[in-house]
Image (cartoon, rainbow, N blue to C red; front, top):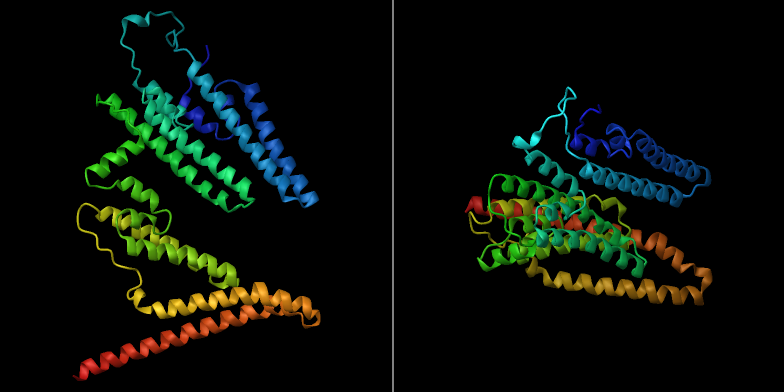
Length: 367
């Protein structure tokens, strides 16, 4: 008699394509999935190294993931179709109809396995609207990002695919939490995530879950909690830093981008934890920012002049006087000169500010 095996263990083993099938006794299928997935990955790696083509390696990785997905779906379908054992461990027939059958563990395993595809676990529990909202959110977001990347021919939108694991994990834990509540005898309400957010808005409170998710983008979580000034400054700092550093090729200061991102993330998490327990103050990150509108206007004027010179004047003069090599000089030296001037000016400004603060403290002490 074939030994009863753990379905949950088989599921996690099948993260290596074919291992779950092999564990469940389907050895030929497991070997085929294993050889196909790792064979494609290994061959693409060899071809990429030999030809120097990174696209071949990328195609191999995509093929590996596709075969792994097919293997996982195949395993889940087979496990859901497996009948319950009809014999005792010693092989004798027994009538189980007269005994109570414990189905809680089986139902929990089924929900976890089905939640591998967002929304299916909720469908299994009868929560059609909630499951449909997760299904549309996951695959709809993926489709929109692929569409925008294809239309604009830009790979920037592919960075937003980092949101998909967040949706997937939230759906998985939401399904597990709901199945525990169902087995505990609590009443299940089939409503979508958007209905929960709307209910919270009508009651005058904001969703902490949504605020936490929005905090992944600098400033968005703060703005959702009503801190418009703080959120706007963090968003401008993050996006403006990326734009300016890319424009001026400030690779030396790229470390500031993750610093701003982590600061905004943990600031948002702290605000979420304090929300509802104490009033939140819309305190800007940089105090007195509006008092320096003159400097901001001057910076915008200089940025506009820089664009005119680099994109209009320099190409025209380079065509008129090719011997001057103006475009090469601007690309190689002019940006470096501007960056150096900005760094020196910023350092002098900080030094002058620290001296003024010391002078004020000394005056206050004498008085």
